[in-house]
Image 1: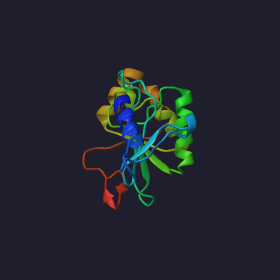
Image 2 (image 1 turned 120 degrees about the horizontal axis):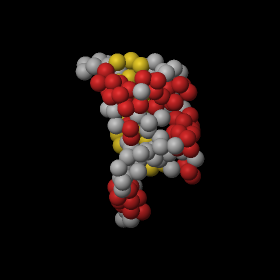
Image 3 (image 1 turned 90 degrees about the vertical axis):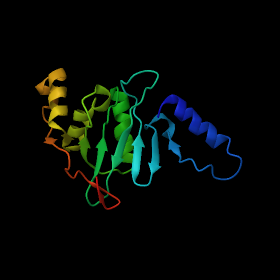
Length: 166
């Protein structure tokens, strides 16, 4: 979420006239985890600090999938080791069994730290051939050393969410 949207959600929640404001809870866990927001059932939006464009300082990182087909995390991009530890702490505290990392595109604020996450959990990274080629062109072929890369293309099934293909 952008800082403006974040402030808006908190203000709406604090100023609700009565009862439930209808605004989903945003968890910050006292600085030991990254903010988590559930915009709809079965989809978690994690918001690690990233190297994105100011004034925004976080990139949306989604977790989708069910237990049977496996949860995937999309675009994890923690800006630092401290933020990486918060990201993994969040995944572990929420007991999220992540089975793959999907990178939507080659911009740094969508994949920074992803190879480290793949190595930590021994899970593959999924991306298009174009995305892999662009990242390797910028960061070198060694960027993915020790990481299993699965090339995906339009129409490939990555996981299921609420029993439906994603």
